[in-house]
Structures are given as C-alpha cells and as structure tokens.
Image 1 (tube, rainbow, N blue to C red):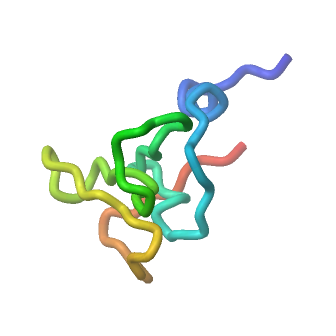
Image 2 (image 1 turned 135 degrees about the vertical axis):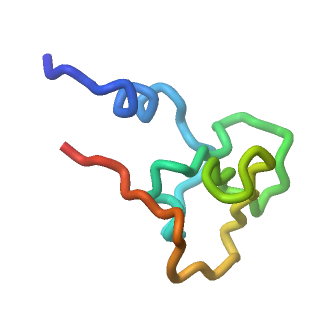
Length: 77
C-alpha cells in the first residue's frame, strides 16, 4: 500500500459536497464545503484560507476568477 501524505489522506476522508471547474478548486487554500453540510448557501463551493485571512473569503461557483495572486497548486504525485 502506498504511503499517503497528510494532504492526500484528508482528500480521501473529507468528501466535498460538489465538484467544480472553478480555478480555486485546484488550489491548496480552498477548503471545500463537506458532503452533508447544511450551513452554506447552495452556490458556495468552499472558503479560501489565503485571501482575507482570518475572515475567509467564500468562493461561489458562479464567481469568474481567471487569476489569483494567492493561488498555490495542489501537489500531485
């Protein structure tokens, strides 16, 4: 069995409510809305942990973001 990094492990345990092609979806700073969560409005896909810290920026699926100064790609393999 392959060793998982802590980030990869959390990706398997914390299942997001929905998938998106939003640019933030591939950023390490996005914390997605978890499956079964009843709190956030339906259009929110998660919160950015880098922009406007400590008051996290809500990321809606309909926001058009082409480039972000805080973007940091998730590490893959």
